[in-house]
Amino acid sequence: MITNLSLSNSVISRFVAELRDTNIQKDRLRFRRNMERIGEIFAYEISKTFDYEIEEVETPLGIADAAVQQDTVVLATILRAGLPMHAGMLNYLDDSKNAFVSAYRKHHKDGTFEIEVQYVSCPDLEDTTLIICDPMLATGASIDLTIKALLEYGTPEKIHIVTAISSVDGLEFIKRNHPDADIWVAALDEELTAKSYIVPGLGDAGDLSFGEKVQE
Image (cartoon, rainbow, N blue to C red; front, side, top):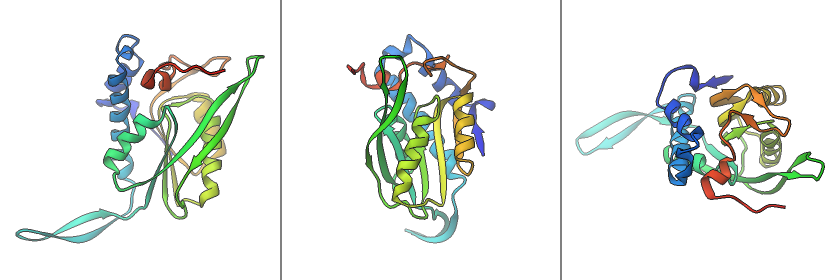
């Protein structure tokens, strides 16, 4: 299933617009906060798909019935760009377990690149609801390798993939390679450049959140 939140009008459209705006991007705090708020909205929307059971809750004046989430949730993200969105999701799904993956583009002199996974920190994923967030889904290669790395830690009952902006090509790639995963996007862009950057996109989400890096 693919859920594109831009197909209906909501406040998330303003947050995405501000993420793209070159003038507002100069404020790193606001950029991070907008990513965080988008993560909060996704967490709320995804929570509607969880399993719930009615449990009794004791109040100072009596007993109330409450629908309580039954899913064991693991929130995963790709360092470093995914941290603000991950924090937003964790604001709402605050009892979740967490996983972190270091995956980056290793560029070659001929202009090509490959995705390299260097580090994984992950709890047991068996029978969990795994939610993987990354601000940008360009080619889909990073998410693909991240899923494969995480599945070494168990088989989740359900996988959700969350991204602020996806390319059409990246979305189709993930659909083909992970057909059972639910994909959530805040905006879908048509163009992917020869160097695999999304257009119009927003630029480098990691640099905009945390400052430009020096990388060979």
